[in-house]
Amino acid sequence: MDISDQLVSSGTFRVLKEPLAFLRILEWLFAIFAFATCGGYSGELRVSVDCANKTQSDLSIDIAIAYPFRLHQVNFEAPTCDGKRPESISLSGDFSSPAEFFVTIAVFAFLYSLAATVVYIFFQNKYRENNRGPLIDFIVTVVFSFMWLVSSSAWAKALSDVKVATDPDEVLLLISACKQRANKCMSLRSPVMSSLNTSVVFGFLNFILWAGNIWFVFKETGWHASGQRYPAETMEKQATGCNQSLNQGAYNQESYAPGYNQPQGGFVQQSNFGQPAGFAPQNYNQARYNQTGPTAFSNQM
Figure 1 (cartoon, one colour):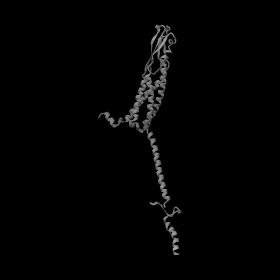
Figure 2 (tube, one colour):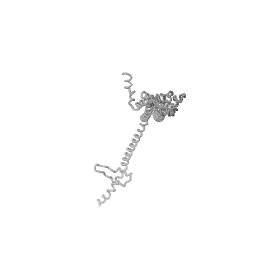
Figure 3 (cartoon, one colour):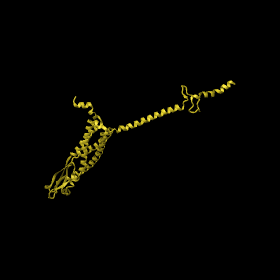
């Protein structure tokens, strides 16, 4: 038996069948896709300026854009079509803050989910000791869920602005030669944004994944089990109270009705109605004398 078989037989990897471990693996995989599709992006757009004087035309102007999308630092040269030197033009906008924020959250989420997966699989005893591990895991999961929502929303808005700023038709408006009717300006190629769109999708998928994982981490904290135990204890106390009330009622019934005997055919009532509660058997002879006295006297007569 090799080491892997021993680990499986000992139950080390048995926790992989549990939802929490499986979701942790999905979290760091989705985090990789999120920061890879955004942080590794590079694209290019192309425009052309056809001047009335053909010798000054530039029919292939390539403009490269990349992460972190500081477009105001992206410069290119375009002809002026008036015999002067080409002008240097820069794109408009700085979208580095939401892009870097999104990638930073993705990187930290990847590192934490990877570490949490290792701890949850190989260090179960340390994880559950004093309930500290599940409590920290629960807090961090809630924080990352919120951060994924914020960063994904901010990056989605920034990406929309990036698409507008890098639209070739918008770039042509920055070139002074294109404002003259004698010159012809055309957009030849737009930047491919499919990977950036994918990064936004993975951002919101990560939010859904982390938010859904809150429930499974909450169950690990023990609060869920304690919340279910309290109603059971309450019901048990209520049942115990009911049994005590029934026993007390039966005791009171026997105490206050000692003269009732219930045979098979019904009940027989002893003649001690109206007597005080302290009426004892020693008064039975006196009662019998009171009942038999007049009868004996009539017989004598």
